[in-house]
Structures are given as structure tokens and as C-alpha cells.
Image (tube, rainbow, N blue to C red; front, side):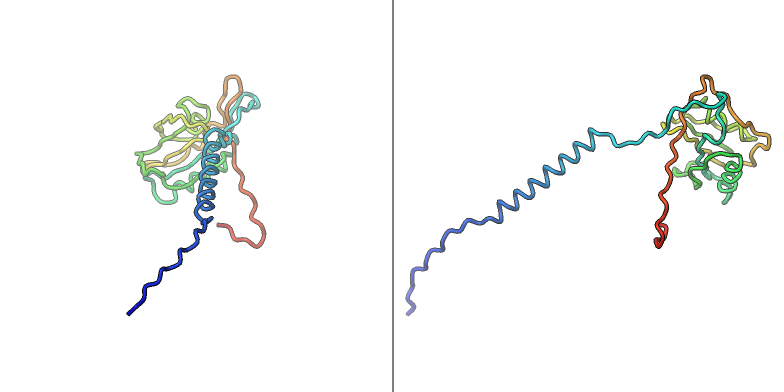
Length: 186
């Protein structure tokens, strides 16, 4: 017959693991809340354009950033047109297919306002009448959308646009940092 013996009571030990874990989680929560609050209250946005006094109160191609998009034209049309615009002195931003898959019949010029000097200067480079779209962008760049009926740029295009008062917002160009030697570009 088995004799039942009274088992000794385990000593009550205080476990430190649970409070320490809870304090660590509380610290992570407070740190995340602090970081989030600072991100919301302190804007980290850099200026997208700077007000600049233009020489002779004229906006020239060297002060305009153009994004050239293929919106229905033949392959390579955006690149070829961007190369021509670059030879005319324009600063080229992006060259690609239209990001929203928007199609245009011939041409569209998108900018901050329909009568903005940069939009008028880009529209003055075209032989065909372009659809002007004001989208209220704050960086004052211009999108040129090339459609299936696009032919060519105007060989006698305007070289500048007069700007009353001579001040306009010039886009800030972000330069890429040089690639350190021994590293491949992404």
C-alpha cells in the first residue's frame, strides 16, 4: 500500500520576468507615441520650390523641370522628345509611361495653373494645340503627356516667357549623392 505523504509547500518566489517585460513594452509604447507625435507636429517636408527673381523678368527653359510621359504614343517617343527638350535647355525630371495609365489623343500639359509661366513656356514648344490641365501642384514642375497623334516639337519655339514682376517659384532639384567607389548603383 502506498503511503501518502504530505508534499512540502513550494516557497513562494516573486517572479521578476512579468513586471520587467511589462515595463519594456510600456517603454516601447511610450517611445512610439513620442515619435509619432513629433512626426505629426514637426513637418519634415522640404520646400519644393523657391521664389526667385528672374533676370530680365523672363522665364527661360533652364528654370523649368519637365516630366515627359508616354500617354499613347509609340514606344520611345517620350525619350526622344525629352532629349530634344533637354537640348533646348529644359531640366528633365522623369521620362516614362503615364503613371495613371491616362491616355490623351495628341498632347496634354499639366502644371500648377493654366496660365503659369512654366506651363506657357512648355506649351510654346509644341506645334499642336495641347490640352492644358491645372492640377495645383506645389513644386511648379510641368508634365508633358504625349498621345498617339503627337507629331513633333515646334522648330521655332518660344525661348522665354515674360513674367510680370520677375518673380516665380523655381522647382528645387534634388541632386543624387555620388556613388562611393566599389559600390554598384541600385
